[in-house]
Amino acid sequence: MYRIVFVFFFLIHSLSSSNAQQRIIKAEALMDIDYFFDVARRVHPNLYSKVSRIQMEQKIAAFKSQLSPSIDVDDFSKGMRKLVNQLGDGHTNVLLSNRLREEYLKGNKRLPFHIRIKENHLFISESTDQHLKIGDQILSLNGIDAEALMGLASYPYADVRANAIKLLEKYFSYYFFIEYGLSDSIDVKYLHGEKMEHVCIPLVSGAPNTGERKYRYSKVAPHSGLLEMNSFAGLKEKKFKSFLDSIWGTFSQEGVDTLFVDLRSNGGGNSYFAELLLAYLVSARKPIKSYKSAIYSYKLF
Image 1 (cartoon, rainbow, N blue to C red):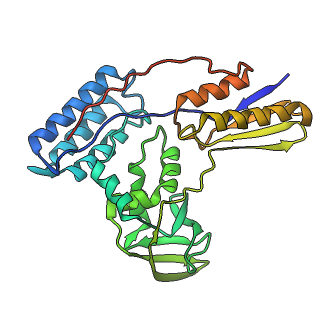
Image 2: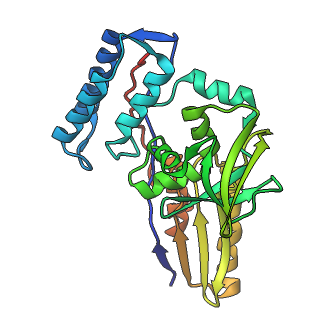
Image 3: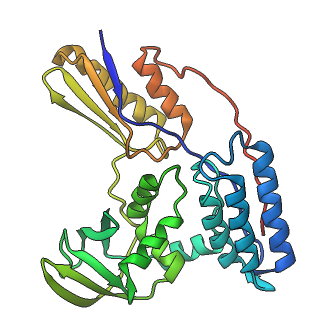
């Protein structure tokens, strides 16, 4: 008899926006804000599960009070993103403006390193630059200190801060660009051991490598296997089913009777693949259920 142990699990998806113009007036912005939260209150089953309605309305009022008579669409989308993320709901979010995303991709520039965050400190986890070594602690980037850089965690949408931190680690170069922009180089102050260093290094070209393996299996004990599912997004059905068939076929051969399913780093994705995995876990070999979901969206700009 097989035992299945789940280590943590949640799925996310999203709602919202795109932009058609570069600036909007304050009256339009106020209408957009009110419409967004009016729809959210009507369709969300528990919008205030993480923050009270009174607290959220205070945050909304504070955001409105900071709006200028004429508002840049990019800045508005960033402000709305941060505001809505304070709901603490990974299923409800505002997409950043199309122009920002397109500019980042078109620029084809990214930071030459990846980061790891531990106790609100930033460390190099991977680097293509000769100066920065794994484990070096970042003190500042372009004069922006580490405490301010941790503020970028307000951009990823997630149910808990720990998941926002994981997403910030994964997409740090993108969120840094969104908040501060990128040129051709970056000024880095860091600690190498106990020695403070300062270097200006060039950015690199090409799509960022997030270092993510969406799924993998390993045998971790004589009768136990570990299935790591880091994402349900962007999977290919034929390839994923082939992967599941191959590992399920090894259980009896290798005497595996306990399977640990680790989803602690899973940021969500297509629910079909979660259902497909669950079907394998109960030996159905087909999705347990299918359903259509309604996504309420409103073009903010």
